[in-house]
Image 1 (cartoon, one colour):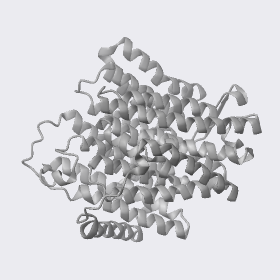
Image 2 (cartoon, rainbow, N blue to C red; image 1 turned 90 degrees about the vertical axis):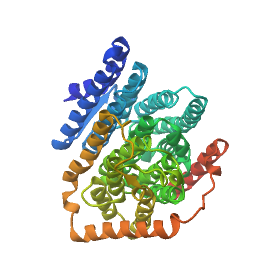
Image 3 (cartoon, rainbow, N blue to C red; image 1 turned 120 degrees about the horizontal axis):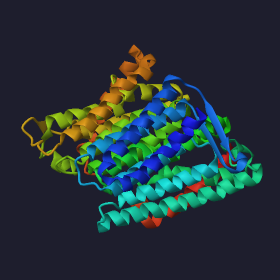
Image 4 (spheres, one colour; image 1 turned 180 degrees about the vertical axis):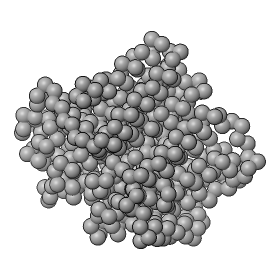
Length: 479
């Protein structure tokens, strides 16, 4: 088991090197890596067991693989496989597939890390690979967005690294469990770095522009799995140290409400999806015990939605109401939208019900409001016009294969949510969605209001991070 796990971790990086040597096999090699990851993740979920590996004692790597890791790894594997299928007949080069697989392997590494120094290395590799994928079109706009992402990412990781050094100074170990014995400043610095990488709350407002301006397959990777590399360590720390749960949950509630507030008034499809990601990261944080299940449901939906958004006639909702999309494309978009809104028959329903069941009363009230906001946001997609005669000739078979994989997984994943299918939960879910649709038709649809974006501007992002750092410091002291 130990040897198998180490081989599995190193496998994507070896294949990434081979892709350059065998460029004609780039797609097949890359897809093979994701199939191996799917098999490994399912093995962890079907035969749940916890494995801890310590390499080079406290100076080196500590790995923990359990069911939580399994859900996140499965999300990464399915989303990456769908993106590869989507790009199958495109003109993407071996360079693109190499970076995609290196990104895949680095994301997997984060999901098994249990120490701050190896986590730092994995997050830095992710930042570089994501930068190269964002800038892949080589346009002025893509290069600027990629450089903006890299600058924010590196700044966040600088804060994180200082915190990790303080943890080691206090414990002579980089293990996650040393966080409680570390100075208050260490917790605040590490959490700031992870919240920023995960696109959570105000420190994550770099996310809407980055995800919306990237190519659709890259947006699917970023929103489906990459931002979860910042959220996963927070979930792991909350499960290991109960004292940190209130801090994590408070940021989860804040992110859930912030994302839907901005997203409900957004007029651009990809920015709406990106702002939804900010909100959905909050859902993962607010109930760490079921965070893996929610991450799986969200990743599948968000990848589906971004891949579809790249094939719509326009990014503007006003124009989409004048240009009907093909009915088959609309059906898949509706299925994804219903899932993330919490409709029964899809994984999103069970994930939302399990999450709400974990919360205190005040948290449940706030998250029910966020759930209604999510329904408002995705009602904008559900009520778009469609027609059978719309031109769908540009949609290749590999595109439908990618969507079938993602939506099929959303339905099959219900096996993990069987206990949530009670009459009370079904009525509650339908009521939340109905309330969201009503708000959409009465207010959001008719409103021309748009929330200002000063906090998203490049010159204000670092200032926002500094304010969050101060807030974190006082929260940790209070807890």
